[in-house]
Length: 268
Image (cartoon, rainbow, N blue to C red; front, top):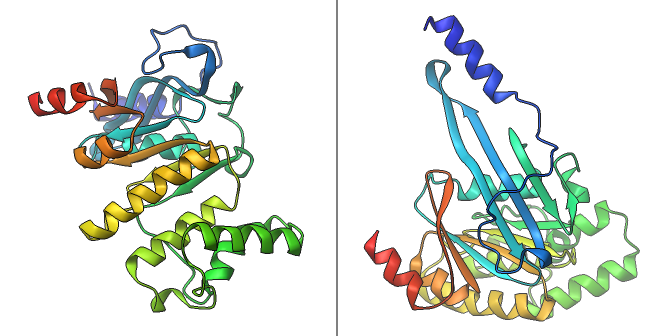
């Protein structure tokens, strides 16, 4: 095929219209579809590659996550975990398929209106703002009343054991404290869905263990639906109600947390 035709085909694939038809796939990963809080149906995401090629980051992926569940996404780097979170949050658009949260299709809903809070691998704090101001920033942008901002921020500081640090700048904090501030910034939004993209990978082992316990307790206390990305099987085992293993842009295994996950993972 001439190169011009290859480029044309690639552009066609990358700009296909979003699928609006209600699909009936064999749903993966939900033991009760009727109560699914996050539903992903035939989700495909492509990126342009070199020389007019197409990189298919996600391939017709189906997944359902129950309300108040903590689902861990595990798998090697480059398998599509972060892309999947970005699609749910609205930071990327799918080429086809649907994303539903709480029974509402979100494909054309702006990120700020999805009631989703996301925590990234890097805390990405504003260096010129204090801990208090970093956590309060999003609430002030939304023009919440000052008293409500104060209530939420002080509650997050107490929950995350950051009392006494509210006036410090990020450079005055430890790595674990900076990550707690990032969690606090998500927590005060009171979202029903939390997406955590390897938030502990840059910390040493003792801090990771401490914050894992805090995240698990926080998720139970909030009753939020949470998707947590990691490439560490032990971390997945400790945190997840269920564990989904991704490979090459799709889910190759999903299990309730138990001995089956680590056994199957070793076989791979």
